[in-house]
Amino acid sequence: MSNGKFERLRISDRVEQTPRLSVVIPLHNEASTLEELYKRVRSSVETLDYTWELVLVNDGSSDATPRILDSLFANDARVTVVHLRRNYGQTAALMAGFDHARGEIIVSLDGDLQHAPEEIPEFVKKIEEGYDMVSGWRTARTDAFWTRTFPSRIANWLIGKVSGVDVHDFGTTFKAYRREVLADLHLYGDLHRFVPALIALNGARIIEIPIKDMGRNNGKSHYGLGRTFRVAFDLLTVGFLKRYLTRPLHFFGQAFLGCWAVSFLVGLFLGYRKFIDGVAILEVHGLLAMFASVLVVVGVEFLAIGLMSEMLMRIYFESQDKKIYSVRKVLRIE
Image (tube, rainbow, N blue to C red; front, side, top):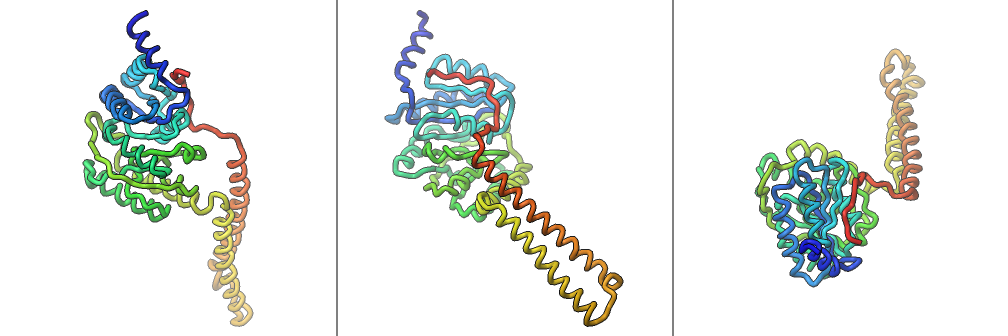
């Protein structure tokens, strides 16, 4: 038996069926840092008295990342590799990692070494203290101020106000979770940065700890100023989910009542002008009368949308779980 195969069996024998700690890392074209990342994560988690696994998600990389991942899996049975069929984005890659993680505690971080894996034990410590989620806070950003740091601060402030969650840094991937709070988490679009707000909907205990922002060692950032607009739209989604996920008719019903209330007031005014002042409504107030009629129709449409949303909401909660990604293959020692 070759040394490589012997080492693999020896490590595999030490792997328990259910590791206590899972480290989830989404990767897209991170070949230049991947091997260093693996070594630093392994050194960090081995300081803990935990059985552990490393879940590496290849989000459609076009460089040498897939080859390196297969090599890491071949030499360490604690490594699980999830190859996605194409580049789905960080939200889907994270969700794939969460779905394949088996640990009681799940830690996620970026694969470009902007986060220091040596800080993982601090996150685990806070989970052990009883918190359901630990979120990293980049107190000193190394990004360009006007294109990255300033828009991020504005977005974090808005998200905090809308969600009611007192977190300063929603955008960082460096977080730790108690497994059960992720059980009902479903991420779509670019909602990964709103995870604290979504988890808080179910009453999770969240704490924030400062982390170092190491900056990218190699390569170019996958994000830019353009994501600010996507954050704004996602913020509307989170705000709606927070208030009306289980009662969408309350939102659309208010819009219906608002339209009909304005239409009713306009109708009273037009009635007064016709029957008291004796004016010809269509000649003098034709546009206003048309506006009132449109509001009636729009109000009915809001009511119809609300009723359909109620039915869709029930389908959402009662239907089978549907993934937002497609897996090509999974490498794991069972």
